[in-house]
Image (cartoon, rainbow, N blue to C red; front, side, top):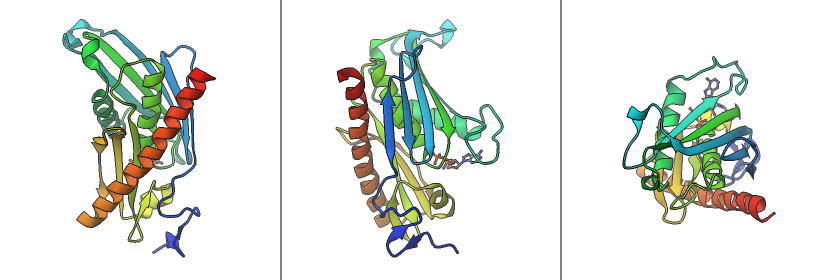
Length: 233
Ligand code: ADP
């Protein structure tokens, strides 16, 4: 078995509670209503928001609220082996959980009969792309001026070599024991998404959740800095 933790440090030199480097830029696309470019470790993600705009065809409209339609897509060149273009089971699942996470913070009742479309394009993938995608989508929604209870944010924790760690790298994701991505509303700490791959004891689960919450709160600050940079100059 390969060693993922040596002398208390991870393969990429991080401490167990350390995030990969993160860079966020708001408002990068001219034609989208709101957009964001985000780098998180080796992940590169672009999010574009359109709407609220009239939902078409009309039979999909909800007279009481806006539909939130997130579409997560991995570019065929984003992974080592060329990925077959187009939707698959994994992207359909991530699109669904992302839509649900975002829908819970948006004041959808203000925009009946509309859709809010959120496109997430993964340009480079290196583990944790759903968290990177949700985090970028949240900034793009704020950039589009969509009213939200809070700016959601996502982060994962997990377990490698029996140690609970923050923000798994690709190797850790593949060879580790568990991955626990979460999305939260940072002010209320309401959980908007929680998924788990692998096995954790209850105690480890609590520890991982705590760590992911801490990580998410730090990323939340970076989201706000990116928005302030665009709007305050
Ligand atoms: P997440 O990206 O949210 O961690 P997964 O746990 O499903 O989602 O995927 C982990 C990582 O596996 C991805 O970030 C990506 O680097 C890699 N991966 C996912 N799908 C493919 C694929 N079709 N081909 C190669 N690598 C992939």
